[in-house]
Each structure stands twice: as structure tokens, then as C-alpha cells.
Image (tube, rainbow over all chains, first blue to last red; front, side):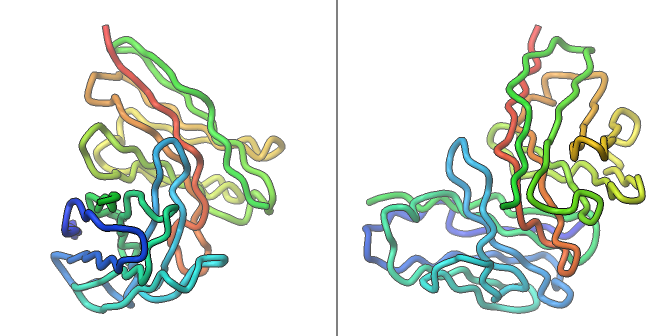
Length: 108
Length: 119
């Protein structure tokens, strides 16, 4: 089973700052089948990025994904108040689909 | 718009069984696979299984193979998760999620249902 490790566990930033989140896979992710989600308490997770770098419908362009193979990054260029949440990655190339443990982006 | 609306929180005793529902709307129910995943306190999300509603095909994680059943009611656009022989380790938030049939990431999720297993 491929393990996804996200870092850092918590990111303390101010609105307007840049956030850089990492997701590292224990084995190469085929076809860059790596997605990023945003999750706020009590809400449904929201798809942000799929295929490592494709933004989902309606996602602002301040969110971007990059990377390939085993190293992937989610970047939020200028944090808005509504962006403070937990972010997790998921690989979906081969079963079972696995998830990272999440990075919490909190207000500094 | 696409919506997945889950049934509410449940409290169960050890050894009991659980049934959760995931009511879908806004798309052709039979065309998209629905997955169930869960997140125990302090743990990462864990995939449990999926159903292809159009074909009534299912696949389950080996971890739950002997006590999980996923079913669907096509007329109601609803998917169900049955989990038996509950223990405290089944305390978690359970989510249903729709599989994007082209790329196979999860494009829409339910809001989650907290299940607490306690004597």
C-alpha cells in the first residue's frame, strides 16, 4: 500500500501570505493521479486539484498544484480568510486509494 | 447541482450493526461509482468500499470484507453502507463520495456522519 506523508502537520500563516503544502508518496504515483481536497469542520470535503495540477471547477486560481512521481505540492498564493482549513492529498492510481494525514492551515 | 446528503449521527453499542445512507441528486445516479470512506479520531481517511449503482457491482477493502455491505436503491438515488460487529474502533466520521468516472478522483462528497460506538 502506498503511503502519503504530508508536511507540515500545521502551517500558521496570516491572510495574504503564501502557503506551500507538501505530499510525498512512498512509491511513484502513476499518471500523477494525485488529488488535493480542502476540508472544513462539519462540511463535506471539497475537491481542489486533480491530476496533480488541474484545478477543479470553480476553484480560484490562487490554488495551484504541482509535482510528479513521489513529490507533490499544493500552493495557495495569497491566503484568504476562507482558506484556513485542513488540506489532504489522495492518490487514486491503484487500489486501495489512500490519503495523506492532512495539513492544517491556521491563522497566525 | 450535484448533492450527496448523508443520514445523521448514530450511537451504537459494541456488537451492533450500522446502516448509513447517502442520498444523491443532480446527476444520473447509475453513471457514477459511490465510495465510502471513514476517518477515525486523529487518523487519516480510510477507504472502505465502492458500488457501481448501474451494474450493482461492489468492491470492499479487505479490512472490512467480512462485515461490510454496500447497496443501492436506484429509484431513490441512494446508496447504503451496512457495517456489522461494531467495536469502539469503528467510532469515526463516515463519508460517501462520488467517483469522477473519467479520472477517478472524488469530485463530490457527503457532509459526513459521526458514528460513536460505546457501551
